[in-house]
Image (tube, rainbow, N blue to C red):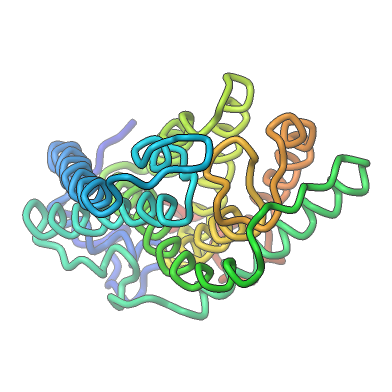
Length: 329
């Protein structure tokens, strides 16, 4: 693929004000967009994240040295399986390290202001965040409706009482926002922005980060078939989130989509094999595999909808044939 000179003044020789939203977002990364910087920055982000995670897990081990479940599992096993609300919150808190890592990489290697990875105006667009939440709420409702209409089993009510759930709901929502947005900052934010500043083709700046994001979640599955389904579904979700950035020129909607999806997964429905201490309803992985075709179909429809002129997004970009639909001319 053609590599773009990093010192070009703009995507098409235009002033920043004349650029399409996506190009305005990419413009902040152009001055020091070098492939070696991107690779080194990703290494830095991962290193900072691992150091932060080690510190969080160490604090958990010191603070909860003898906690266990009635089945005799200890604190470490509880933590790795998210078997208690505190263990789940600890695992979510470990992703805060992604925020620190992206900030450090951008400042040290690129001299770029951190919030330019979110939007050109260096702030969260909360309206777009809300649109992302609404889109996922509709997708989730349709997913459950079609699954039930097809005769798939209903989830089982977990042992968590409503009073206990109400206590943990707010901290879980805050931590899920930090976790989901941290992943967005790295995959859809930093990596996508840097690649778009260097390469024309969306197969590089769009598909590559999405595939990496899907593979990053492969270990979330408990057996090979479920892991494969989870990876493909996560990749489709990542592509939908990438389309939201391409059309809005901001990470805000993608953050809203990811946060809403994970709030549902951590507070409403989950699997009965692991990370199941904070949800109200639980499904077996076998039942989820039966619903997988409906989920994949709806994720594909979500992607098509976000590309369509009917999505609640800027209308000019998706079907334009000019160079502004790419990262550079």
